[in-house]
Length: 214
Length: 106
Image 1 (cartoon, rainbow over the protein chains, first blue to last red):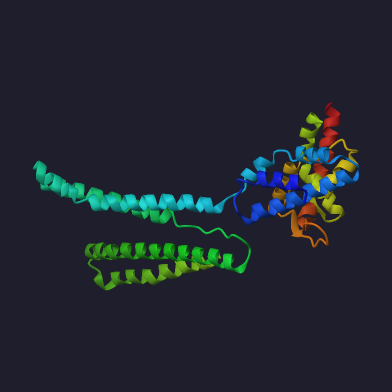
Image 2: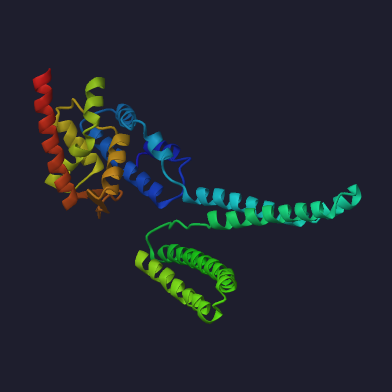
């Protein structure tokens, strides 16, 4: 391939991500530019002029190349944010006993100490839960081969499993207090146990929903 | 060349589909036939071409494959799909309507 063209293309793709999409575009562009150059030479045009003509027609390829997605960079950003939130959540939880230390020193009421303690814990746990739900890493396949497809499939499957389990434990922790409240209100303990049958039912429904989604 | 090319650029996708209706083709050859047909009065910019290729392929109107070249680098060929043919017919129809209306108004 013509040296100057090769240099031009290398410079054009200097900041492009190392993805299959970017590499294929590069290959296609290189082949087309070389074809055009050869054609111009064949019609008797001087090499310098041919080169300039080819370059001039590339147009705003920079915009096209900038728009090439870099999934690895995205992944890195997401992981950074996830790590930050996790660290923050844990830090806040570790700091929670401070409330007791401070109130002892300041002589404040014990109730205040306990409340502040719980506020810290709630904040920390809240951040961890939020992070866990929002920042599950999603894997973009790097090529269409079997390995990448499987990686993408297995991370998606893990995610689905996590969501399913969270849903099921939510339902179980709701049904338990519901059972007690209902039973104490109606005193119909011989009937309210039926409420527990809702658990396998909802589990089946959730599984059916996910099976249907695929 | 400047004003006309702005107006024509909107039809880039239909132009590409038209070329692919005839036969499978690759980037440079499509551009060359555009140049020839317009007697060198119009030429597609590479950037425009590739953006159009990606949009068309993303919408399922064309698909691509790599050719087996005997010499030089391998080329990326495009072929029109059944959806692409229908889209082409629709676009032609729209263009005819558009032409008629504008001719009436100008």
